[in-house]
Length: 440
Image 1: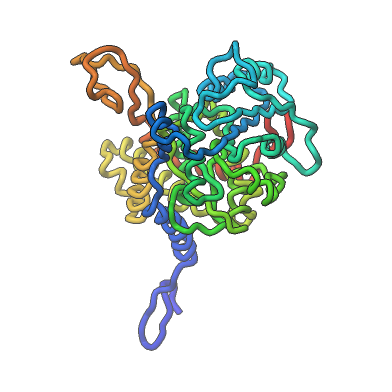
Image 2 (image 1 turned 120 degrees about the vertical axis):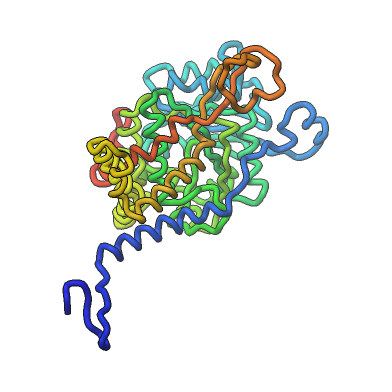
């Protein structure tokens, strides 16, 4: 036996180092999950009957779903108008008996989880049906209990659940509900992210990438094992009676990561899950700063506490460090070395072929996420000095318009991957267990 190998049959065979085997296992896990993205569902489509007067006339008499929208809310006074106004209209002059303006929606229910900031009053002013949340039962967390109360109170055939920080197109509920008409039991939409500060515009995509490396693209059409199933809890839908019959949110009553846990519980029971890109029909403003994203998302729920077994969390942490965190650290090392030596080319000589491969995959993933990281810009069309181009500018001869364009700052996210890996490590080993003054 030598340090480099062992003699067998007259040949010297190199010993396989344990760390190489471990790295190979982590890398295979990450790549096999990303590979599900080869078969992905197309963008969310608005059904013809929900496309305005023309669609309504062409499909007169056709059976349409009756949709209840449920919004759980706790101290959301500053945000809740963003989700209610597109569905119900502006505040003032409306009551719960007035019909919502969103196609197919028969009611918008706000489950007020004992807010202390006037959330319920503002919701009523918009015409929402407000349910005062009852006392939290033993064995339940606040959001799960609010969702359950909204589910039971709903009168529609289909219930669409929206977070209070979602800003929907009025047609979003109809489009998500249409996925159920195509044979799914549980449907969800991935929304665009509205990010207010520059630091978070770089950090947020890096945090999201850690999730994709662990569960893969949610909108894959491949058969996904229940152990890695997931939905976007900011926007999802199910048939009311079917979800109640399956146990409702009692299935995941004490699990902080309620959306992932619900998807896995129902997938394990044979439910078919469909997730589609809904970034053109809604956006969400999750956090106001990078510090809040680190504390509330990375620290509290990004590690999927309760939804993934502890051993799986630790394994996935190894996956993230192998394919995302450590290659990013070597980029930092290369940059520093290059600056000190006066040659970036010499600095990046520290990168190994494995690092180069992982970085290429990482940037490809970031380009794939560009659709959900977009910026709304005001542009003067027809101004020769304007260098901004985006969707919605073609065919316009002049004037100030709002256009959507790729957030180029988000493309820098791979440079902060080590920070995202550290944040995930902290959230895995020492998660935050309080939210808005309540234990979770």
